[in-house]
Length: 288
Ligand SMILES: *Cc1c(COP(=O)(O)O)cnc(C)c1O
Image (cartoon, rainbow, N blue to C red; front, side, top):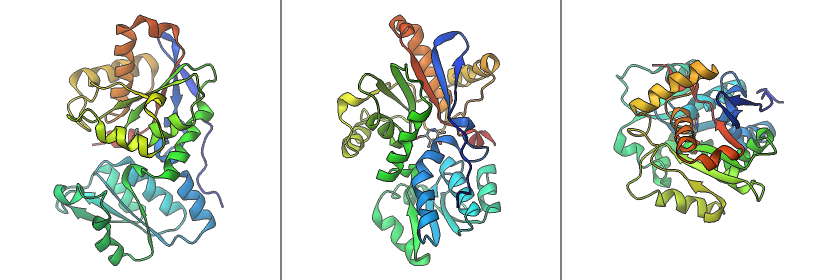
């Protein structure tokens, strides 16, 4: 039975830019962050149709992913476990307080251990402790999540020439690119820095079956580091709210919308294109 009601994906205009539409993933669900809802959709289907006994996953202290997953698990009455980067004596973030309130059991790992989360060995001891648990990778990088992310196209206006999204794990970008109509250009904006020119990300895209001519990266908009916007990005976000009455999260969308505005100011040819920018949600992570 469906227990998570997803609102239709709407779009609205950006004040001052008649050619830019904001695709409102932030409005898909009051609690589950937009982009995570699409990624978790295939898992939710499996929960509904198969025997999933419990869920095991990993994330940071402000993780939209763990937050979404804990809520989904609660709605379906499933036990869930979250492995978090941090220390047990640190005060819980509002994100983790929600997770705990929804029944998620939290365990802590340090930074070095956390960096191993994409290796199968990371999971061995946790799977031993929680046998029969479904492991959900952070960022949801998986074939099913990439497929789920194709649902963004349900809300992207049909006259769009160029669509822009934040890039964390790249799942959303891969889903968008794989389902894009031929004439639409797909652009990803990495919110983390990579001295290696995003070669790992590009490699992942190839693995997902996305060829290099199916998307473009606009780099240079990662701010101070993952989770830390530049002063300019933070200021931009305030002005954007005043103009549009739409809140942006600090980790992803402040950087993305600021990047789009910067590009529009630099390259006037963009003003004649129909641009859709995905608002991927994430506002729960703004709470301190
Ligand atoms: C996870 C997340 C992203 C990043 O999406 P990927 O598919 O991992 O690249 C973007 N925005 C928000 C709000 C997120 O929570």
